[in-house]
Length: 198
Image (tube, rainbow, N blue to C red; front, side, top):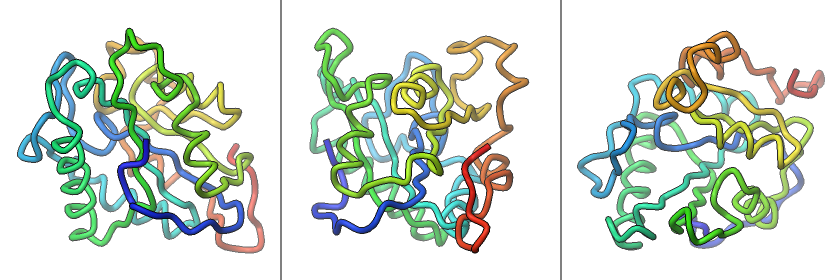
């Protein structure tokens, strides 16, 4: 389900950075839910990371599971306010996001949009095609990496949020310290030497 923007303009396929929200862009504790805008705390380096990702020629699309809606912990309206706060805070810091998609369902509902199922990427792709060989999914959990695999794109682990409990300490060898470290490592897609994500 698209949370923002209300309408999208279709363009040509573009390299796309699909980013998890909780634990990747903003702080998140295992077993807790962000149910009000006041609880949303963005990581200090996240705006600079998103700004750099955009500057390197990627469309930035946030994909997030929000089972707190399906579990009855918050309403769709509350979820929308949280996402709008995220966008406002990033904009204040000079960082822009092209779109936000979320799954509102509880795990037992077996929907096709709950990560790691690829429904959110398929919906985003329908709205604005991605250049898949030059796109990636970044997140702090196993479901983010599995979503990338199912969608046929590169998966990138960030070592913030719940990575340790989701993947185990050994995963640190394959991860990036935070979203800014990942952004710095990405190839630049704006020049003539555009290439696949290694």
